[in-house]
Structure formats: C-alpha cells, structure tokens
Image 1 (tube, rainbow, N blue to C red):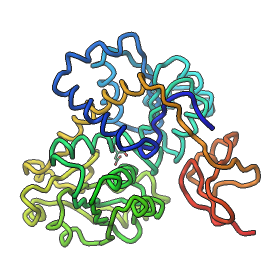
Image 2: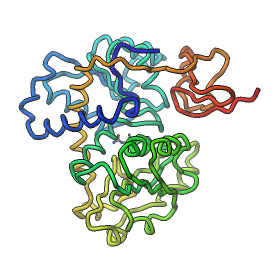
Image 3: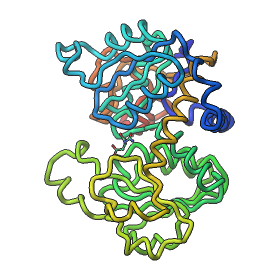
Length: 360
Ligand code: NCD
C-alpha cells in the first residue's frame, strides 16, 4: 500500500543520505535561523498526543512556531472525542484534513503507521508504544554529529530499559547504518533488547555485546545513552519494582569514563542519573533536548517540501491471520488490514515488527 504523502514512521524507511541532508539543514538552521523564520507561513501542524510528553511535543510546537507556522492539536485524548470512543482512523482522517503535517504519539505499537494509512497529509511518528521514536533519534544523531564530530567508529553504551525503550530501538537501528559502530547493551536479562532490533543491527553489519554491569562497561564507551525504566509498559507494578533502580549513574562511576565520553538521555530522567552528574561537562542531555528543536524544524520543512511517496504496507495482506503481539495496533483497531512480510511459517507483522511462527 503506497501513500501519496511522505510519512516518517521508521527512520530506516529512508536512506542514510536523507538523514544526512536533514542534519545538514538542521545545522544551517542553528547557524542562520533568520533565513527560515517565515518558511512555514500559512502552514498548520496538527499534534495528536495520546501519551504524555514534554520535550517531543513542545519542541515540535516551538519548531513550527519558529518556522512561522501555526499549531492545533490535543495533548490529552480525554479532552477530545477519543473519550467518546472515536477510533484512531476517524480522528486521524479529520485532523489530517485540517493540517499540513500531523505529529502523532500513541501508547500502542504500530499506531503511527496505522494513522498514516488514512491520513490526508504527512504523518510523523513521535513515539508508538515501546516500538520506535524516529525523531528522538534524529535529535541524537544531530547531537552526536555536533558534539563528537562523527557518526562512525563509536562505542555506544545503551543502558536501562532496552526492551521497552523506543528511543534506543530507533537509535541502534540508525547508528548501525554508519560504519564501525559497536553497541554495548547494558540491561538486566528481563529488559534485553528485542530480537528484531538485534537482527537489524546484524543485517547492517553492526556489532554488539549484551552485558549486565554498567561499571565494567563505562571505561570502554565513547557515548553512554541512559534510559528510564518504562514503568507504564510493565504488566504489573511488582515487575516494575523489581527492575527500577538497577542502574544509577553517579559522579563516582563517571570517574572511570573516558575524558571525552558523553552522556546522553532522551529525558525524562527519573533517578537513573544522579542530579550531581549534571555538573559534569560530559553530561549533555539538556543540550541534546535543544538540538531536538532544530532537527524538528528541519524535519517539518523537509516533510512539507518532499514529494516522496511512502510504501506503508509492502507485504501480503492476510485475511485469516492476526498478529500475536497483544500490544500491536492491529489487535486494538480491528478494521486495519493485517499485513505481513516473509513467507511460509515465519511472518513479520508490518505494524509492530514482531515475528509470528505459524503452525500448520
Ligand atoms: C522518551 C519517550 O517518550 O520515549 N522521551 C522523549 O521523547 N524524549 C523517553 C522516555 O519516555 O523515557
């Protein structure tokens, strides 16, 4: 199924040259913001935030305002007709017909792709459940480019909730497309990186190791990307309690890090980085959040100017098979066409990337 609009659902739907162009434009916006102040005059961005957000939502809003455009939307679905039971398709269909570009965050995996299927303008995925977060990754790429001067040859530690953390999924998928990056995945065995992300890293030629100890890994790292344990994605409070506070970055641990290692975090922080670390010049997470505004300015401009058509569903639409992932949008919005890539007994859902092993 091909859409006539350029959507951003997964960064890896676009070639690395496209990301690089977007980053170069973001740098130009940082250096010469006055040149872009009226580039979106008369344009409207819709924001549908079905999940809490501070930075992503407000940096998108600021980005559009700084480009001269305007914004509509909700940040609490309970104040919209969603509270009356309206489905994703209808809300998206209408708000996209009011807007020139639509930004959506949703707690369910695959929701952005589902929204794009019926949208009347480009859709940007601002986080779909524990799946992907491509615009955080653009933020991270711009930060790495500006602060490390390169996107290649880095040893990157990702630490915390690697199972549910969508930011590290998108980050590892993207950084494995640049040469010679090595990932050290630091998590408990319960919160390990999903197999579909590790498969993608391998397919791109990236290398990784999985460890449980942060202290042992720190001296090897060029970048330490800390993440929050994603409380809202756990099945029970007990399971969350068992995982929280496992990894806490302290000034003491920073002593064994390289002098030019940088610490990133998509934020919000809970307690995985002690506040005392903020004074360390290597702690760049607040600066990182500001890069996010510039990269989103670049993204909005690109989406509004692009004539690229997006292939949303490339696989076979199956009538009799459902995705086995209970968190997949196809199991919440039953009208959606079920689509899988692959053949035989192994199929991959095109909304959530989970593999189904079918029994015949
Ligand atoms: C992240 C998210 O929403 O996935 N925040 C963000 O967008 N900057 C990280 C998180 O919530 O832990």
